[in-house]
Amino acid sequence: MLGVKPYITFKGNCAEAIDFYKQALGADELFRQTFGESPMKEMGPADAIMHATIQVGDSHIMMCDDPRGDAAEAPSNISLAVGLDDAEQARKIFNNLAEGGTVTMPIDKTFWAEAFGMLTDKFGINWMVNCEKAGADQATA
Image (cartoon, rainbow, N blue to C red; front, side, top):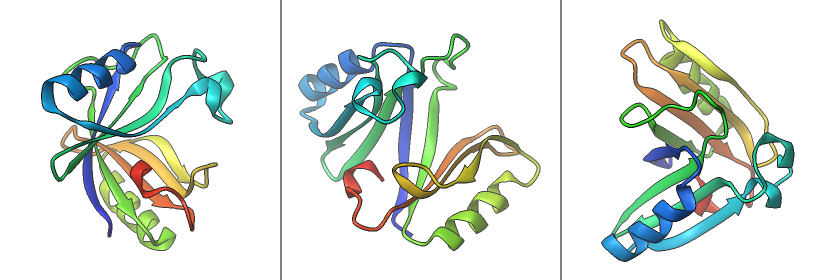
């Protein structure tokens, strides 16, 4: 297992948040991709952040803009992201966490991952389970 990281969704102001955290926390920006720069152009506004990762000390915080009109607001906009390097293990962990919970996005292959899925567990905690494709940039995991 590669670890667990916080994942924050914003309602259109993720780029502003990244700049704020860089200044306020001395964060380093490791990765930023807009919907317009991705194969998922139709999923959101071209300038909205599809995925970004910043580093604060030894910690990584991942974030994006959620283009849905009913996007969650704080504090429900934070997920725990599990990073793995084994697709079978990713599916097992996803299914374990989903037991008694609600699957938001079934675990499946994506353009960035061998396996990715989102769910809310039976305790109301939001989870993302991600298994990188071989050779993928680890700043996104």
